Amino acid sequence: MTKQYKVIERFKETKHDGHIYNVGDYYPVEGKRATKVRLDELSTTKNKCNQVFIEEVKE
Image 1 (cartoon, rainbow, N blue to C red):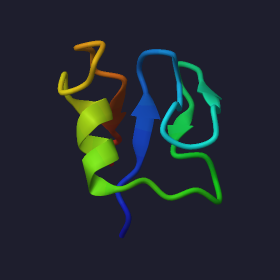
Image 2: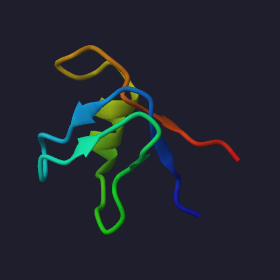
Image 3: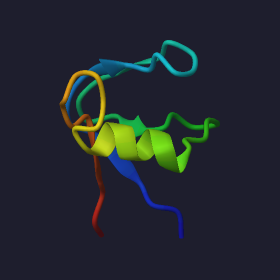
């Protein structure tokens, strides 16, 4: 089963298509794939904003 991530802080996807993700959206949008590296950047503070943007959805 694929992990799902939910946006907890609004951001613009600068690495791909410029899509704007709002709080509550799922990441990535349907039809797109995210790399493990990108998921790590967005789910931790290991990014230029030092901010967490997504979190894994636990069922």
